[in-house]
Image 1 (cartoon, rainbow, N blue to C red):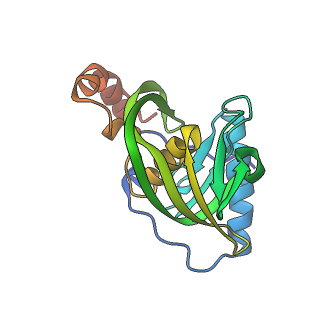
Image 2 (image 1 turned 60 degrees about the vertical axis):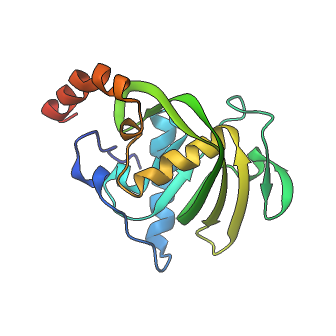
Length: 183
């Protein structure tokens, strides 16, 4: 089932999300619906607040053609990134590290706006899957960026909060228009 993706200006996008204390059947259904919604919108990540729910649940699926050769460490073993996709998790613990890199980002909740964002190049993450398994991941590349972007949503942070002052000035009118239109 496709879900409505909340847009820039919706209060839920600015709220701190609650931890998922106990995984229920509804969380599995939500994850399936979030994946379907993300695919339909041609995204690679979606967090629960983007569909109106203030809980710490994220889905990510980076297509192979986006980053085919990315190797990551999963629970101490070298793996192909595709081996863990799609990635569905709750209550993430992230430790970004490494040199900051600029890369263009966009967001399904901030339609038609893309801008350069500086983020650490690597991430160590502890991700709790819905089946109770824990993934400890060390990664770089697009997965590291996507993890940081989606987990920002769980703290009420949008990528537009992380852009340079000059970019904020450039985008100010478009963002204000989005607020006024409620889109």
